[in-house]
Length: 249
Image 1: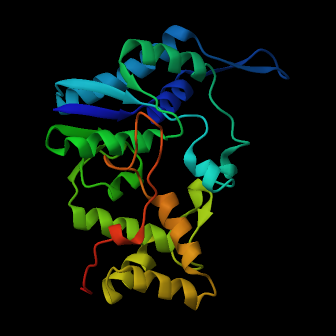
Image 2 (image 1 turned 90 degrees about the vertical axis):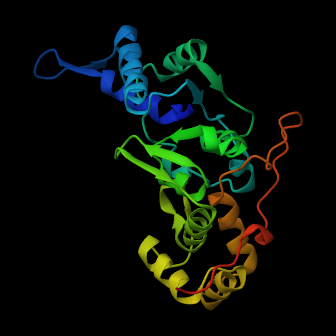
């Protein structure tokens, strides 16, 4: 089994963990980190996955700085622009990519690379990520933040994607329906069933359009193995016919 790691999350956790604050006197504070400590913190995270999963191989997946979602929706993750990055993260990224087998593809986030590679060979692959969005993929997923392992079915993945179409994802800078968080979205889909017509109807009841629903669906959808041409870099956008209908519970 190979482990595909969300290396963006590892980079930030390792780099923040390596930072050290020093108070020089009553008025002066500085923040620093050393490259050996950065590398050690990253290695510790990778080693923890080796201990937990005992994978046959490890591969790291990194995000491109600009992605197709930014082109499609310029406000995507705009709420994160002013947040500070940890010290040394760029050098740590370069070192990690030279140390392990790594993937960084044009216009894609690490999530998409994880989704593409994992759905190519789901029986022999496990995604390692603390991102809840992995729940939209029919794969094996180890959440290293919680220690939980899941084998997600196609039906479960599609249901979770449908909930995100309704709720949006404020952490990524895009909204869905007003008043719809994850729990409300789950309840509505359980009551009415999963279908594109149900989703569009709920959007239109709030004065929004099918195009609004489609934009949210595409922002929330993580690419799978047939959705990206590695030779041309072309992304195949999500379409409503990919949503398999599920009856009410």
